[in-house]
Amino acid sequence: MIKIEEAFRNGKAFIPFITGGDPDLDTTRELLLAMQDAGASLIEIGVPFSDPIAEGPVIQEADNRALSGGCTTDGLFDMVKGVRDRIRVPLVFMTYVNPIFSYGSDRFMERCEECGICGVIVPDVPFEEKDELSDICRAHGIGLISMIAPTSRNRIHAIAKEAEGFLYCVSSLGVTGVRREITTDVGEMIRLVREVSDIPCAVGFGISTPEQAGQMAKVSDGAIVGSAIVKIVAQYGKDCVPHVKDYVRRMCEAVAQA
Image 1 (cartoon, helix red, strand yellow):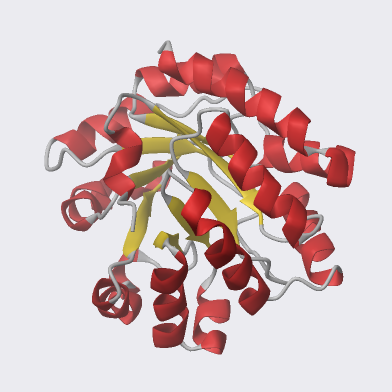
Image 2: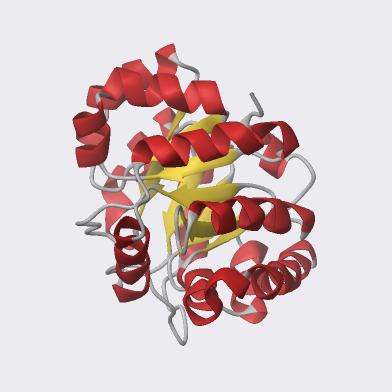
């Protein structure tokens, strides 16, 4: 299994997000390969869910399209397993605790291990309750990615000390989505992390342009982009792959120059 740390070994990381099964699993497979070829350092795959509380309308609609199209958790696992021999970058699932518990926590992590998923991000599991998943993740070699937000200030040291893989730094309050400008002092958040840990820090939520990605990468170890990519998928449907590949290439270049 490829380790999450590989994403940050050669400098700043660009991390794209797509919703699994949107518009279908065949397109998701092609997107994984295209984004890898475009220079992505690590790829997040959203497990479609009917109530994604951290997501804005763009990703909520993508979840609905994927579910309406028949994407299931088993189908997503099977697709990733089928393509894993062609994947050279770490793959991480973004999901919620309900799909994990419904599937069976141990079975979910066992399938992650089987198909080459090296980490999970679970936004609705707070730091204080992560022990509900951390032991099971550890038993299967799956990193449980922690998140910090602008409101986490008094807890950043505690979260950073126990973080695995990389730390997901949320740049903006609220749900995911494109933002015209990012006003949070991300540098201060990361300074607090650095007081206790050297874990890589990648910034997400609101980033959509190469300029924003470069700006965030200057003060961190990488940039994460989801909604802007999912909007391209929504616009072009099954013909989205070359458009996403071009976008990811431009974002990778901006991050690399930071």
